[in-house]
Each structure stands twice: as structure tokens, then as C-alpha cells.
Image (cartoon, rainbow, N blue to C red; front, side, top):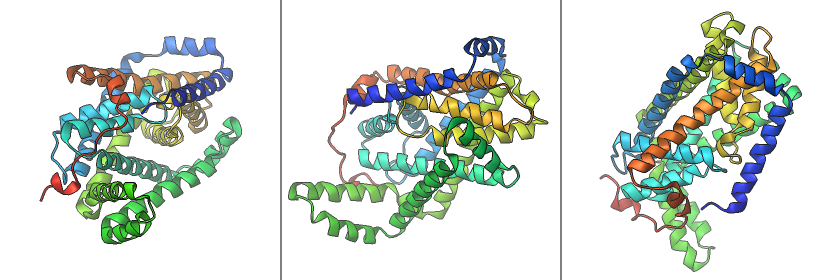
Amino acid sequence: MINTWKYRIGILISLALLVWFLATIEIQEMLNSLLAAQYVYLLPGILLYIFGVYLRAVRWKLLLNHIKSINTLKLFSVVTIGYMANNILPFRLGELIRSYYISETEDISKTTALVSIFVERILDSITLLFFIAAISLVIPLYTTFNSIEISSSIIWKALIIIFSLIFLGSFLVLMFSSFFPEQIRDKSSNLIRYFPDRFQQRAITLVEYFLEAIKPLRNPRTLGNLFLLSVPIWLLEAGLFTSIAYSFGIQNNFPGFLQLLIAMTVITSAANIGSSLPAAPGGIGLFEIITREALILLSIIPMDRTLAAGFATITHAALLLPMILLGQIFLWTNHVSLKKLSMAGRTKESPTPSQNTKK
């Protein structure tokens, strides 16, 4: 599953971005800001974030319920293990590990599990874009993103347009496929017949697994619940950003708590959209750069770049390290190693969808 050259490329990308990040600040001043921070605010922020991950398990359960009812705590452990893998491996390989692990332990098709995770990512992206769009109605974010482009060479307008087209287009494709499965089967069959004979049955099976995974989207109530869960998931992560802002005294740069929370929600959205590119492990490097620049530009009172860099560093550490630790605990308690999971590249598929689907 994990090729050495891919891992090395991911590490090199992270290192290059971190060098850029550190080259634009006074390192000693950043260390001083880290030493002066009040880390008592860190614990509540981390607890908020972990609860948000638990809600991700609840949301995943909704996506899998029509196939098999799985205990939410079990799904929480699998989601955490996937996050741990994403945080230490490049190219978001944690998604593959997560789909493999749930398929092995719950007899669910890997393809179905992977498609359900893809649906989650689309929901996440649409939610983050919604936050940015809604907040831009009351705050001139266009000027902020222009400033980010000038200061960091990140072409934000182009990125937002590209991501919006990709995510919204993918969502529309998923919705169409869920409501018109027969049309998808027909179109797929016409295409599959050009495949070599030995691949045709496999391709047909994959199409069936895909259609099985997106069935919940045709239910308006389920779809509404999926979106309703996505909002608090990301607001809880914004709560982590807000909590760490208090650690660095950044709340003093804003006239009130509401303005601080709005700014942290924008920063959460921008950092996660920007660092979602499947390259560096955990988005290391890119996350820090985006978070730092967004905080500087959204601050009402001018903010020191070094202080913003310290905030970005601790925030990312608070997102990565608890998941790595908690994921490792779940691996230990289940007597599984990450190496074993990551090496399990080619495994036999689960039975056909009709064999493990609720009637």
C-alpha cells in the first residue's frame, strides 16, 4: 500500500514547506511565545476536538447503517486509527487503512467503506465552503484572501474556485447516482464491455459496491442529518482553534468573543481546505503557513507574525498528537499494528452487496 518513494516525496514536501514557514519568522521569538503561552486552555480545546471526531463516527454510522449496524464506539476507534495514519503517512493513506480495517473487522466491502469515506470528505468540504460563504456576507473576506495571495503566493481565489467546482460537482454526481442507479448501471455496462474479459466482472462488482455505498443519499432525512452533523463537527474543531487563541492571548486582538470565533471558523475552514491536498503527512507545513497568514490578516488589531506562527504550530500539534496517541492506544487494545494494516495492500473483497445488506 505504501511505496517508499511516495513516503519520501511526502516528507520532502513537508520539509520544504516547513523551511519556508521558518524562514519568514524569528525562530527565537517564536520559541519565546511558545514558552509564554498558557497551556491550561489546551485541554478543553482538545476535548472539543475529540468529541468532534466522535460525531464523525456517528455520521459514518449513518452512512453504513443500511449495510450493517456497527457500534459507534467501534467506528470511533476506526476513525481515530485512520486519522492517526493520515497524520504520520503521506497522501492521506489513512483513508485506505481505515476502509481496510473496517472491512476486515465488520465484513463490509472495502470499496463500499472507501466510497462512504469519500462521501464524508465531500460533506466536510461543502460544510467548510458554506462557512466561508456565509461569513463572507458579513466580513469582507475577499480582501483577506487577496492579501494572503500577496504575502504567501497562495492563489486563494483560484483554489477556492477549483475546490468548489470539484466538491460540488462530486456531490452532484453522487446525488444523481444515488437517485438513478439503473442509469449508472447501464452506462457502466456499456463502458465495461470494452474492458478485457478478466476485468469485466470485477468492474461490475465495484460499480455495485459504489451504488450500495451511496444509497443513504437518496433519503432526504438521512441526507439532512448528515449535513446537520457536519456543522457541529467543524464548529468543535473551530473551538479548538479558539481555545488555543486564548493560550496566546490572541483574544485581545479582537473586540469580542463572537468576532474571535468567526475569525477562528474562517481560519479552520481555510487551513483544512488548503491542507487537504494529499501530499505531506498531516498537511504539515502547508497548514502552518495558511493558518499563520489567515490569522494575521483576520486580526482586527495588527498581529506579530511570530506570535501567529506559534499559534499555528501549537494548533497543528493539538490536532495531530492526540489522534496519534489515541489511535495507537486503539491499535494496542485491538492487538493490531499500523505496519500490518499499511502493508495489507491487496486483500480479497467482501461478499457481494446483497449478501450483507439489510432487507
